[in-house]
Image (cartoon, rainbow over all chains, first blue to last red; front, side, top):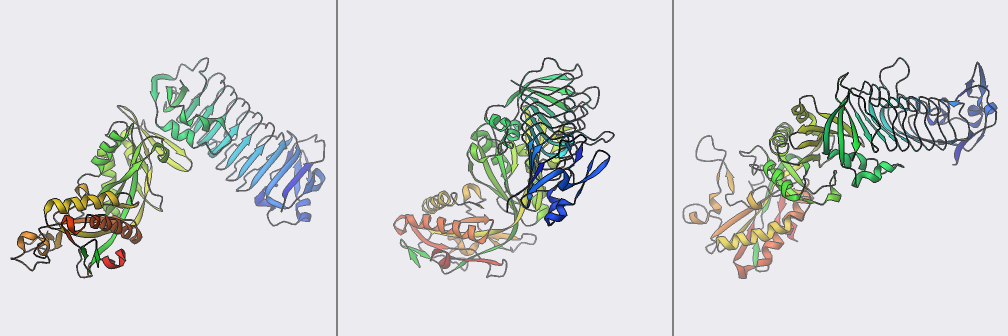
Length: 271
Length: 298
């Protein structure tokens, strides 16, 4: 069995909804059935074989080749399997996914991993706004799993984050971890304005000292926290630099907040 | 059967089903891990009056512990899950939470759970923080020396308690020396503990008593000072008997420990006053697990 590959053969003018192309939906389907799967593209519907050239037969290992930032909903709600995206991906990558792994070689649009329940998302490029957040109007964001961004992430990362970990190796934009309920966001680079805005609980782990922290976060002093090596060790099997810090990062400065809200969250700045 | 001049009785140890768990205690260094573990496994020699039997299983290197610090694994055995749960929770709260620099982790993975940090977290008075790492929940409880880190719960499994053997020697020092050698060898066997002080019990008991309300009393057939007063099991030259009790996760674990212990005790040989190895049983009526000495040492 070889990976089931979908090579984009159109120059897309409208966004294409790739939600039906997951292992759960494709398992057991014949090539003809897969070719006939309808995909929403703008205000019309395309057959899968009109948008993609298909090769291979292993629905547990799906590849999107020549992918573009107009491919939305890749891996939406997937429960297992592996999806590799060669190129960029659009919005809602891995939305509500419950298991499996998605790897994107390029960058992704807004709302990647939003309301994700479990699994792993690896983005080698940059991520758009609302990474791991809740959908607009919803109040519970990502609730499990791990998201790794090798590049930068835009604004409102982890808005309403409930559980799980978002690991950003580059920089993060404004309002990092806004309205967080729980969970962990770690950033190796710099962060934008207002980190932890309206944060209830959860942890922002910053490897670089931010230029400024909101006045609603109170300094709790410098500490050696025993849970940090354990947390970082948990990332060691993943493709991320954070696992490498398990032996060295133990001492942090702790800021508690957001005191304008529940105030049980924390920003930990590595020392 | 005779090993190095020591007579091995054609007898058996009688053991019974228990419930067991294991925890991992870490600290800044082994000294403080021992302080916490010794306290947590203290007053846990026998279920007769302690409600549970407990002991330190072995030392753990930083590479073996979840938080990369030196630690110890300790095991707890009780007659039922409810008692075990209560004992472990109480002891964790009073002995490990209170011990400087300590952290507490699960040492067993099983479907049945015993809370560790699950309820201890409330000591944090709302300031406790939950972290889910690799599918396991941990609690960070703020305390005066920093944070107490505890895994949410540990596993509970079916186990066996009451494996034993008796060392009969010509003198008290000789009996103790043989038992010390046995314990040193048995501590290398995983999944077992010897819950009595130093692993050795000098007051082996029989079931029942002439006094109402006492369900155990001195094992008079093995008391050397009563040789002429009771139906003694001891030969004239035996002046001291000591017992090693073993609790383990499986029959195989207890058998391995008994074999290692008896071999070590017998290695001192008859020339050092070790005369006989026997075992405690109740005629096969009490427990379903029978450990025959000849079979184990074959």
